[in-house]
Image (cartoon, rainbow, N blue to C red; front, side, top):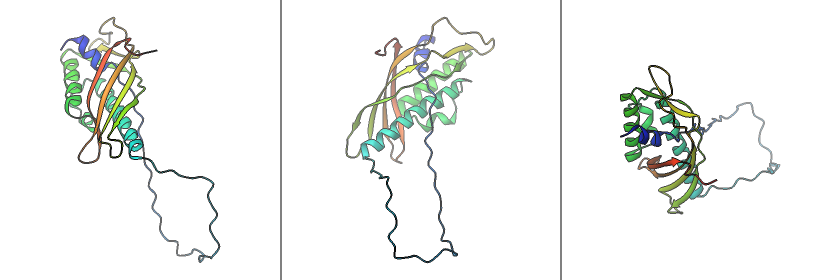
Length: 192
């Protein structure tokens, strides 16, 4: 694998934002006042149920951004064996990441900075019980470049830039969502 193809594979990384859930436990208060027959006040806010397709989109985007974040973190030391790489990627996607990081390690390169991603869902399949989500992105690697680990010097004079990315995210047997494949195109391949 050439340095240029490694650069194309890794150049569109991003910082992912984590989605957190908070859970609170309620316990009966033994000193609480007895219940009255007065009706409870109505809330002015309404909640809407999330459709299976919307839920799948959210989980797929979280996995996609998580994959790039995991990869960006591992790339700071070219750690192709990082256990975090498998949290959001599997199959061909995980192999591509591991091989690219190994090549950087072998060549004495590390990656500094963080890229920016702008993922959008292109399709959800099937709509009623989604198992697959296709994502398109315009990743910006302008501030995410390769350096020689020993000298700290920039590895080449090729600037980063905006690249079109396509990814397939699938629901695993355990219910988690993971990126299974992705393709990173050349700098300038994003539409304006």
